[in-house]
Length: 65
Image 1: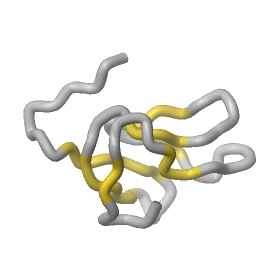
Image 2: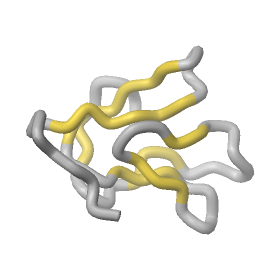
Image 3: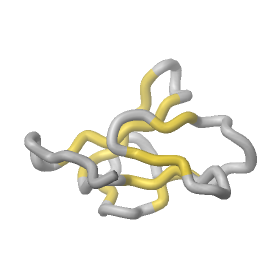
């Protein structure tokens, strides 16, 4: 997905070989290095496009870990 696009819980944001991108807030790294969302919201990047985050739709959201 691109920055600003909506993602659902469990939706895969990036499928990658290795760890070109790192997980940030409300996202996790799967065993195959895919990055997926823990909450419903919008995707955004920081640290020069290297870290992927999700801005939750609900400001009081907490990720289930």
